[in-house]
Length: 73
Image (tube, rainbow, N blue to C red; front, side, top):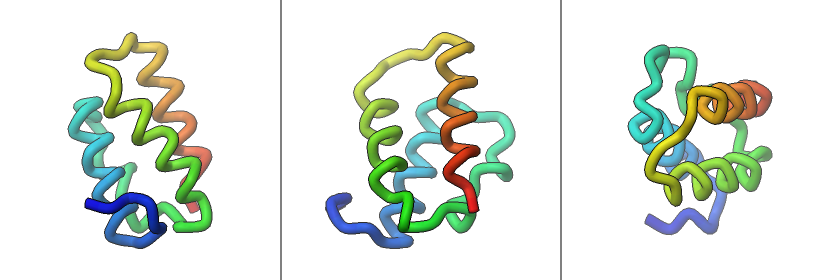
């Protein structure tokens, strides 16, 4: 998948991958339609960071969730 171009499909892919990787419990709070492509670069940065790591501390997961929350519409 080419994530270099902002699109709703790419946002959906990144949000889904982040939810899966972090095993987020409240997945309904993180729907791809809650994110704008105008914040695509910030979302992509979070996605890249999450995909590079194999595990996260609870405080890191909380910080990631808070950052994603700040990007929501």
